[in-house]
Length: 199
Image (cartoon, rainbow, N blue to C red; front, side, top):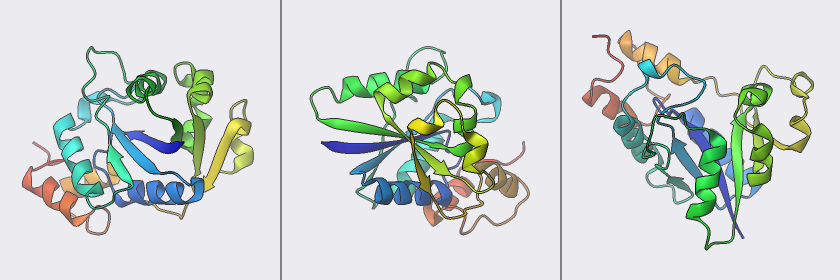
C-alpha cells in the first residue's frame, strides 16, 4: 500500500521550513511521497493579501524540483466555486482521485493547528479519511494540546526551524535578504515577479 503524506498550505512563499518538515516526516513515518497542496481559499486566513495561485504553484514547482519523493497536487487551486478549501473535502476528492489505487493518506498538520482543530469543518472525519501526523513545533508542550483528537495522532518531532512565510514577505518588502530561507530558485522567482513589494 502506498503511503502518501498530505501537506497543505498557502505556501506564500514555500520556504525551507516546509521542505525540511516534509523530508523529516517522510523519513520518520515511512512515507512513499509527500504531496504539497496549495490552497486557493484557506478557511481560517485573510485571503486579501495572498499571492495569485499561479505564483504560489510555480514557486512550489521550483522548490520541489529534483526530489522524486515530493509531488504537487493542484486539486484545491483548480476547485470551482468560492467555498473555502476545507481539508475534509480535499481528502474526499483525493480518495476519488486514487480510487483505483491502494493508498493510505497521512495528513500533516502543525501543533498550532491541532490546538484549533475543533474550528475545522468535520474534524472527526479527518481521522476516518487519513492518519493525522502532528509536527511537534517549538514552543508547544504536548500536555498543552491534549484534547479529544491528540490521542489519535502520530507526533513527529522536527528540528527547530524558525522560518515563516510572513517574515519572508516582510523582509522582501523591506529589501532585506531572504537567502537561506527559501531555495535560490524561489528567491529568484520572487524578485523576477516583484512579489511582496509594496505598491
